[in-house]
Length: 123
Image (cartoon, rainbow, N blue to C red):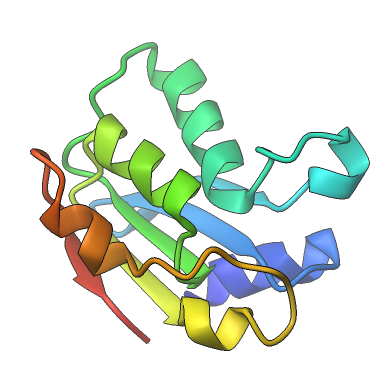
């Protein structure tokens, strides 16, 4: 989680993410929405894009994603489609909503409706 927090600091936003396998950080990213003029450039999406490009595969099962804030519905959907096994987050969507607009659908609610499952560990 410390590495995700550091990513958030580097990006100048509250949003940072790392993806880990066997306790080693494989990729890290932060939110680049403003820099990229891309509303999909959330930390989690940026990290997934990096890992997909690095591994040259769609299925990312066996990886753990750490993120400073609970993934928004867009990010959580991408995480589930990618097959990420575990998601660990710091602040909840409700908490993040106090600072930036959020669609308040919890990660566990999205996961419950998905054919793919991920273990969700809140901070």
